[in-house]
Image 1 (tube, rainbow, N blue to C red):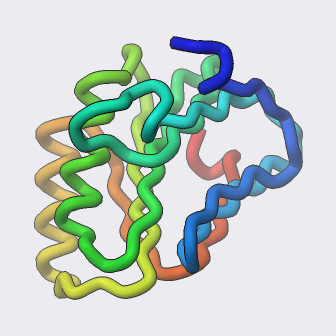
Image 2 (tube, helix red, strand yellow):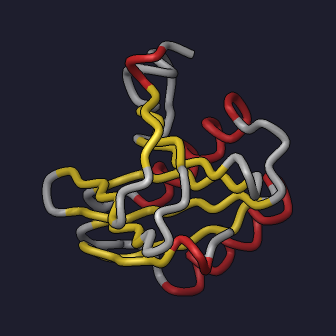
Length: 138
């Protein structure tokens, strides 16, 4: 891993955004986290998600894909990134933040169950701007 791809942070809010999709992770206790740029940095070829946020103390990995509307492809990107970068995490979360989703709620539920079984990943698909507290994930 190159140093330019990884930054340690304890900001009270970590914001990941692209076009109109954004994920804000609130870190009110200023836990030390590792913010890792995946797309074009840690992984340069093939499909991969945009970001990885890691709490090394709790062994929690949060994979983030900011997308327009292709949720099925975003799930594949997250799964491949987990396969390549996961480091014995006790908890793995996958966030797909999309501007719109052509997938039905049933299709999203199926994908959620599938990745939980295949990758041990808790998947959340949310629209446009989503906010989460880090304490609820670790």
